[in-house]
Length: 114
Image 1 (cartoon, rainbow, N blue to C red):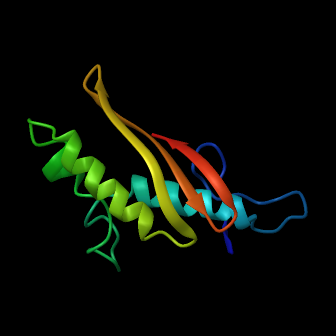
Image 2: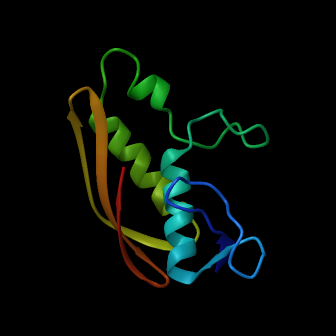
């Protein structure tokens, strides 16, 4: 599996050879899952049906972590290379929704936090 790599600020970048950086295998699966978890429903011009419904579930004045967890789980299972979601923990701390997930990919186990 290959994808365009992103840095810690979630920006694409040029590698040391002067080329657009490419992520492979486990790193590519991680980037794919992270990008999916960060995407909001309707924000992508050419795929408005993709993304998590954060406006309806989180920012509606009455956050529902259980619904968000279910949506996040389904999105992760739909991500390329992801086979299973071993665990998800969704919490609200200081008015911020946070998650920690462990997934199994074609290339190994990953822990994602957001």
